[in-house]
Image (cartoon, rainbow, N blue to C red; front, side, top):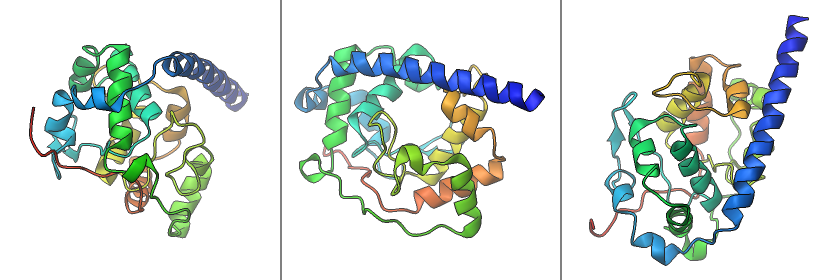
Length: 227
């Protein structure tokens, strides 16, 4: 009975999350991003995301995520999640709260094309097979059903590309979904929380290591100058 109640609650949360995502997506689609305009307002981004090997130190030491080549709708969704407080990282929240919806659309458009020739994906369609243990973990969460078989072609552009992302960042992000109630480092997303909480931290680290080892679109493009 307890198991049935938990599953019912999880499905209700997932349904509510889909409704919420659909509302955010509909609003975002009304605002067209301008990559050229975005280039002029990324001064607050390049100090972390434009330096190869740059590491954050909160909540632990890890390489900041690569965002050049990430999908525009995911970048916008992430920034809006920080802005609304669904993602609790203090620095990112502080930055996101200074941005207008148009700023977010422009920054997202810029980074989605940044480092990709013509903005086109260069990720391979097929990826190297994981170990049997990691394959079982990925299948348990059914990660490919949202993020694509190559983990670079998500079924919804508001979901992130994962292939090639820094493994240490992916691990920190996955743990944040397990700590969704934490007001400093948590992330509120019913779908991801439901999946992440199935795994131990050691298992999440294995998933992150595999995804980080794949070839993908994302990269760190060093800035020619700081604005």
